[in-house]
Length: 347
Length: 129
Image (cartoon, rainbow over all chains, first blue to last red; front, top):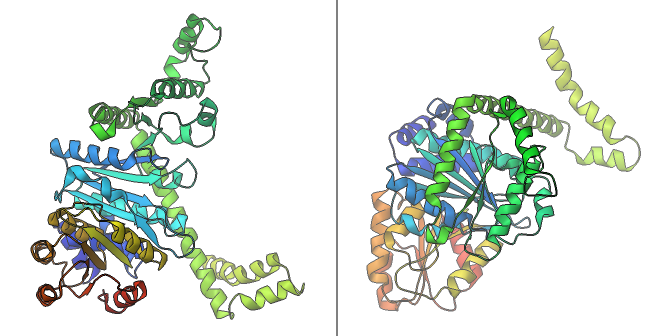
C-alpha cells in the first residue's frame, strides 16, 4: 500500500492503517519520513500525558483506569506503553497490555506496546512520531507510559504536555527524592497504592522536597516561624504567578480511587499551559529539538555513507592501532569532504 | 518480528505460554503477552492494534473449536487475517486439527513440540509485508 493511501485510511479512522503506520514508524521502513510528514498537518489537537515511574509502581493499572474514565466522559484514547528490550538479543516481553482490563474490546482505546529496541535516541523519535499518528487519527487524549528513574526516559516524556511521575509509598527516604531527575521532570506526582502503610509520609516528603525547589524552606521544617515563609511567598507573588506548582495526588489505581482528582489536576495543568503561553513555548522547544535530532541523524548517515565509499571503518582502526594515525585525524579526514561541499555550495 | 502470545477463555494454565514467551524473546522476537482469561474480541483488538506478525493462541481447555474460529472471524473483519500468521498450541485432539487448519490456523503445536521447530516455522512462514 502506498504511503498516501495508508495515511488516507488512517485519517478515515481505519484501525489497521493506524497500526501499520506505527509499525512503519517503529521499523523506520523506507518512506516512513514521508508518512510522518503527511501526518504532521493533521496533528495538534490531542492532549498528551506522560506517565513514568519505577517498575511495579502501578503505571499500567493507572493508565487503564485513566483510559476507562476518559471513555466514560466520551473522549477517545491512545496509549503507547514502552517496555525495555534485551540488550543481547533485542527481544522483549511487552506486558503492559495485561492491565488493560477495563477497556475490553473497546477499539476507541488504541493501545500499542513498544520495545526500547536498544537505541534510546531512536526510541524518542519513534515515540514522538507514533504520538503524531494517534493525534492525526483523532485521539483526544494520548497516554505515554514508560519505565523510568529520571534518566534516559526524560527524552520520551518530553513528548508529553503534562508529565506524571508515580512514586510508590516507602520508596526510600527524602534524600532519594533529592536525587536529580525525579522531581525535575514531573508536573504532577502520584503517590499510587496510597492505601499502603507509609503513603502519608511519602506524600509529605514529596511536598517538602517540591517546596525546597522554589528556594523556600517549607513551613513544616525546622524552627523557622511559619510567618516568615508566608511573607517571602507574598514578596515573590508577581514573578511566581506564571510558575506551575507541581501537585501531589494520591491514588489507589487498582480500586479506581483518586482517578477523578488526578484528571482534574491534568486539566488544571492544561489550563495553566494555555493561560501562561507555556504550551506554545513548549511546542517551539520540542520542534526545535526534533529538527536538531533529525539533522544529527541525517548528517551521521551522510558520514556513514562516506565511510562506506572509503572502504569501511576497519582500515582506519588498523591505522589507529598501528599508531600511524589517531582517531581525531581520522574523523577530520572523513568529515572534510562534507564540510568542503557545504562551503562550496555556500560561496 | 512481533508476536502476540494469547490465552483465551476459561483456561488458567499459563506455564506453557510463559515458557514460549521467554523462548521467543530469547530468539529476538518482541513478544506481547495477553495475560489470562481473555475474550476472543480482546485477542482480536490486541492483534490489530499491536500489528503483530504472528498470533500464537495457547489453549488447553478444550474450547478451541468455539474460541479460535471467533478470533479468526474477528481478524477477518479488520482485514488482519491475510497477513498475520496464526498458530495454536496446547491440548488439541488430532481429529480437531483439520477443521482448525481449514479455518485459517497455519500450524498446531502440541505437547512435546520443540521450541526450535516452532521458531523455525514462524520465521519461515510469517507473511511478507
